[in-house]
Length: 527
Ligand SMILES: [Cu+2]
Image (cartoon, rainbow, N blue to C red; front, side):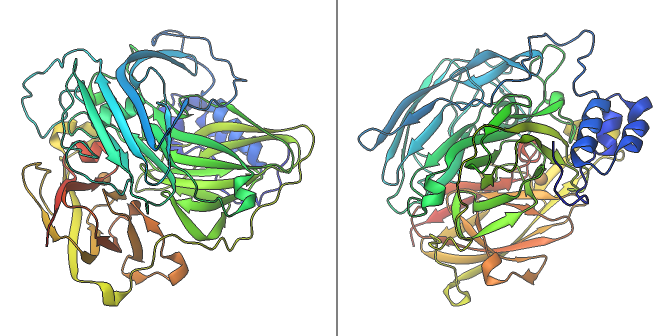
C-alpha cells in the first residue's frame, strides 16, 4: 500500500454519515484514529462506520464476494446502422453487498445493457413493461409520486428529437404493454458517454433509484488520439443503494430523506475490484446515476485525467486530484496505474449544502507485469462544438429554482415540501418557455435555496459562460447538459435551438426534487 498523495484531502466519512450508521459510540474513536495516511483514514472510517458489518437480522441476505471483479454490463451494438433490441422492464432479484434485493430492472440486470451506436445510427427499441399493474390506477394527486410501475424511456444528453416515439418523456408506458421507441441520432451528434433511464413523472425517481439505468455510448470520440484509443474502456455507473426492510423500493419514504443511502455502488456492485497493471492507462466512463446526491470522487494515489464532461470532448485534459460529479453528469477519465498496491476509489467529504454521502466505491488493485502506456498530450484538440459568441444571441431568459419547506423539515413528510421553478410546480400541460426554432439564447438560472441543486435540460447541450455572475475564462466554458446550481448563486449558459421542434423539459436532476415539482416545459416552435 502506498500513500503518495498530498495528505490534505478530506477523506474522512462525514460526521453525519458516522452518526447515521449507528456507530455513535465509536464514531469519535474513528475520527481520533484517523492518521496522516489517506488509506488508513479511509479504512478506519469504513470499519468504524460499520460498513462491513451486516446487522444481525432484517433485510434478506445473499453471499457477498468481496473479491469480485467489477463487471461490465452486456453490450448491444449497432448493426447496419441500427441498434435493434428489446428492453424488458421487470422485477429481478439483485444480490449486492450481502443483501438480496427485489428491484425494478432493465433486462433483469443492474445496470441495464450498454447500448453502443455511431452518429447517424437509429436506436430501435422495444420496451416491454413486464411490471405488475400499478397499485394506484387512479392517483390521488398527479403532482406527487405515483404509479411506480408505469415507465418510459429517456436518452440523457441526446441531441435528438423530443417528439413522437423518439426521446419523448411525456409518453406513458403502462404495465403489461410494449412500446416501440425509435431515436435517430444525427450525423453530427457529439460522440461520447451518455445514458438512459426512465423519465415518467411520478415514478422516475423510484425506478432510477432501483437501478433502471444503462450506458448509451456514441462511439468514435477519440479515434484520433491513440493514447485514448489504446486504453481499455470501462463503464462505471455510480449510484446509491436505498431499500426498505424487505429489500425493495415500494414506498416513496424509502427514497425521500436526503443523503441517506445504505452504501454506494458501482455497476450494481458494492466495492468491486478493478485490476490494472503498473503503468497501464484505462478509460473510465463515470456516470452518476445517483437519485439525489453529488459525489466527490477520489482515487487514492492517482490523478483523475478528465477528457470529456457530459459526453462532450474537452479541448484540454483536466488533470485533477478529485472530481465532483452530480446526478446525471458524466466524466470520462483516464487513469494511469502507479506502483503495485491496492488503492481505494471512494466518495470523499463534500458539501452540497448538506454533506454528500461518502464511502468506498471500488478497490483498484495494481499488479502484474508493467505496461508502458502514455497519457495523451493535455492539449487534446478537436473540441466538437463551436463556442457561442455574444453576437449570436437572439434572446435572454432568467429562471430560478426555489423551495418551500415545512416548519421543521426533519420532522415532515415529503408531501409537505414544494420544489419549484419560478415559484411553480411542474405541470405537463403548461408550456413555460416558447422558443422559436433557430434561436440562440443566454439563460441565467438562479438558486434561491440554501442547498445546491442540479440543473439539467433535454435535447440541446449548453455552454456554461458564468457561475455566480462571474464570467468564465474561455478554456473553462465547458459544454454540459447537467450542471451544479450553487446555493444562493446562479449559472449562466448559452444554447442553440437549431434542429428540433417539440416539447421537452428542464429540471433539477436530484430526482426527489424533480418528482416533487422542480421541472418546466419548453416548446420549440417552427419560426
Ligand atoms: Cu434540486
